[in-house]
Image 1 (tube, helix red, strand yellow):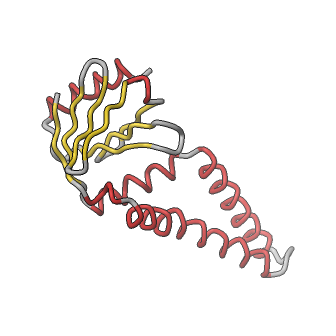
Image 2 (cartoon, rainbow, N blue to C red; image 1 turned 120 degrees about the horizontal axis):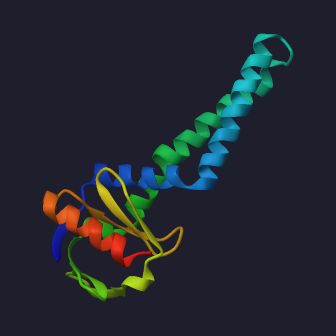
Length: 156
């Protein structure tokens, strides 16, 4: 199987957001910050606390959302040259080959830890933090279905 693709900035930013939001640590921090903000809002409403804890919870929540939703994805997009190139990817029985104008790299299937599927991409994870995204834009429905089956078979 072979796929040629390049990246769309808006969709890559959305994929990076999806990656961050799906992380267990970030989900836990978001829940804790939300619980703190809601609790402080309720206690402030009933005049049990001063306004500072409520304002602190609100500021922390806003900063967390700004960093996850805007700062982290845009910083990574600007830093990585990968998103500005065009690629051809070959999916074989033993490995995955990625080719660009800069050269090529072969990854054996065992190199991938896991994969997840988001609305616009397949995310192939090397580690919990390192991954490669494959856009679905250039794929036909049959190709997407075949790739999904191949990924399920090769990545345990």
